[in-house]
Image: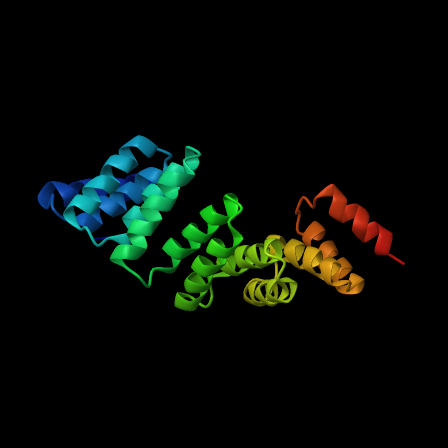
Length: 207
């Protein structure tokens, strides 16, 4: 298949591929990804279900369905689809990352940590998972582990504002004001909207 010039051509190519081979799960999945790019969510959802019908082991399709649930604010649905994703593909980092994210949204720090540790074990360059893990450790009162996860995140992506914000909070908790100020300033310079109470705490520590 030739490389598509744009998303519409990409979609047309995969519609043709499905017309000639309706049972190809990957073609249904690729078509769904193209449709998601155009925000055609209902049609994309139908194609994702078709992808799973054809290829029940297509973990990525379950994860995309989980993402659609998240758009609707359905955390249970998101969790369920991602649990199915890691059931068919246990080493699927995105699935574990999404499971961790849902647990964080529910305030279930320990469950989040377990899932995120798996996500980063299967993909040691998974920046978002390290950042979310830093947050989860912080929620769980494990400040040193939070800092460790945050530092891994910014080593992989030095401009990842969320991780700098988490590090600022963790260093404040630890009483290391200079480091907290450094990461706070970095988060702000990257456009992160820092919570007012953190800003006040940082201002109190500035010399």
